[in-house]
Length: 495
Image (cartoon, rainbow, N blue to C red; front, side, top):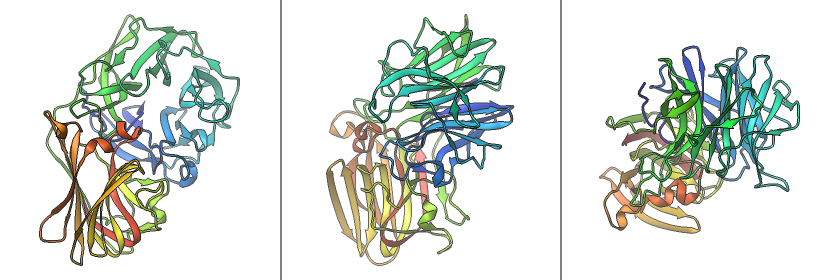
């Protein structure tokens, strides 16, 4: 079976997948963004549709005050005993959580804190007696041991109460590479397999596997470990790891995993961050032989438009740490998204921002802005210290580049009335300074007489590597002062 790649382009890291009959369900990390933990459905592993998010209510995750990179880390989704189960780490928030739902579309439960699990990347598996095993990575996030790594850990768990039934035990933790994480445990034809990531989630990322006769070990490692890694290769997809195993519709096997598409002269910068990829494998002598991840050839441009006529925003729209419904409206001015500012801006941890992921190397985002009652615009964001903005208000269009502690602005007068703002990304190639970054980011404003370009910026400063981010680019609308109305949001992308 040939699988398309990327399976889910753009900021979709740490995929976990489960099969229920002929249906597949996949969940990803979301960190400080809301709604959290996006959920996708497929019948063929070729075409995916977002059917919702696990976290749709602020009480499910305590992300309002988590630091950047905190929040929802590395879910595992499974189906057992007629219910969907999802375990996840709310890093620097509520801790290790278990959510349940009768339908993957939701609604999902408020979540129970798992007691006795101190670490990240929890996994769920059940033996033939119905005993639940929670296997996780023992990275300590807080307390006196913060930063210490205890390797791969496991406990038996009562999922109804969230209470561990024993003290954690240490399991096989890989080949000795750093950061053993993302464990997934499977029973296949009477043998238990423990799949993990190791080597760090950067260029050394790898997938390794071990097997044993019991879910609690002992486990022996595969002689060919790591069974998948792109390190020290020229493959276009790097950082491959954090994988989950699933049977394919044709009876074969596949891995769904994260990867990155770096660009620039030194292939050092990944604008879209960690994305979801897939690959196939075969079993030889009881071990998986995994094919390298291959990119799908480009299929032409994708165009999407949002007219803001629905009763609520679609599941793909994101806000940062606070729900957009608390401070925006689709009914106040039909056909518009009206955002009420609170004095925060894109430099702040909780801006009034509604955006969507960049999913293609070449992309154009546009929106018409009526800033009669305030100041607002369009922002390309990695985090609050790495973003490019273009806004309009008080007769001025203003472009801004924030890179760490540095900030520069460019201004252009505009006449009264709505202004169309655009952010365009263009990949660069060849030699020279212009090719050091993965792309150029162009910021322009059009008040009706044609676009005026205010700034052309280097894309490497809004990449995952420069910002040291677990996320990727999210582009969207924000209000910095007063009340701002947006309409005619457009996205055009092409690889």
